[in-house]
Structure formats: C-alpha cells, structure tokens
Image 1: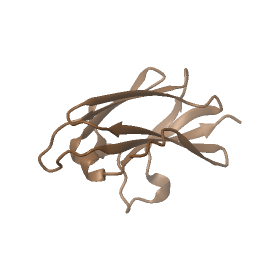
Image 2 (image 1 turned 45 degrees about the vertical axis):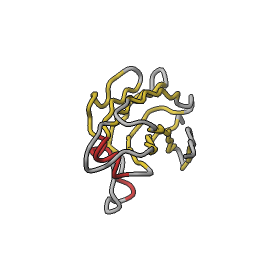
Image 3 (image 1 turned 90 degrees about the vertical axis):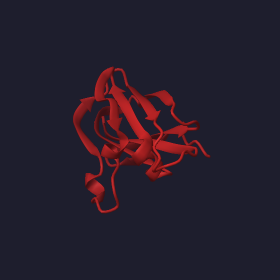
Length: 135
C-alpha cells in the first residue's frame, strides 16, 4: 500500500493538504503528528477519507489536536468526518472556523476497533485539511 504521506493542492489563496495514516494491525492506535507549512494562516476545515471507507466507517475513531488544542475528542467516530458523494464539493469539510495554526502541529490518534460488520485488512486513512494562506 502506497504511503503518499503529505500532498497539497494550491487554489487561489487556499491550500488543500492531506496526510496519510496506514492502518496495518487490528485493534491498534496510530499516532502521528504533522507540521503545517509556514505559509498557512489558519485551518478552515477537516475531513477524513479512506481507501476502504467501510473499514473506517465501522472500525475507526480518533482524537485530533491542532496547536495542542483538542478539536475532536478521543473516541470521536470517523464516520462523522466522512463525506459522501451526494454532498456538494464545497461543503465536504467539517467547518473548524478560522482555527489559528499556532505552532503548526496537527496530531491525530487514530484507533482501529474490531467490528463484525467489517473484518480487518490493512487500509489507509487520509486526513484532509482545508487551509487559508497568509496574504
């Protein structure tokens, strides 16, 4: 499974960033910290996706922090941060307002938990951030 751990798309003053987390074993916690670019002023939104949406939906939860501030508490279900194909493109992100990046660190603790509806196999979680650039 490919790990494209950090990628960006720059669109007229905004930056769409994503970070990958590889889930390789069942019933485990995967902690990763990512450093945002110095050109980012704040984060406007958060979204999760996966190469196996069914596994993330039934098995996944996480805690997400930005600038050492808890955005989503431990146990927050991943399915609440997913976006379906029926959702308009410009409304897919969970709105965080204008979250200042401060120290520029984003931390995610992703937890895989067994569920009989989705037997484990390795999968990838992708954390998307909708960012506003400094002028």
